[in-house]
Length: 90
Image 1 (cartoon, rainbow, N blue to C red):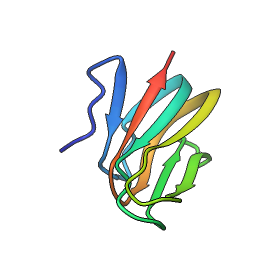
Image 2: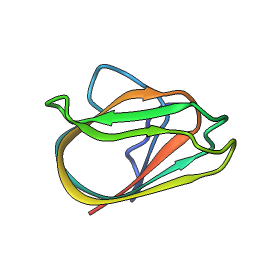
Image 3: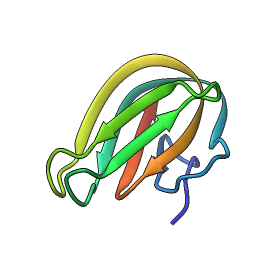
Image 4: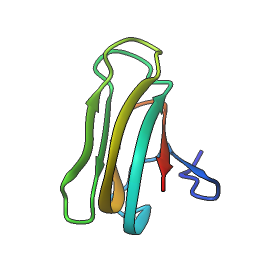
């Protein structure tokens, strides 16, 4: 699959050094669906290299929810070992 920004909830499942979004965005919630096993990582960064999320899977195959409610300058999917990040934004 590939990163999908075509709907009201963005689905990110592919890591890349290139940004998936290059503008300011307010991220309300990130739901990490389908992380396979403990220790898998999801790392999202801004265009400036600051962390949006640096998460490690805590339980096998269970969705993890992160409530942020902050503005960020772009999104880079630095690492995603398994599953997909569902980005709820304003």
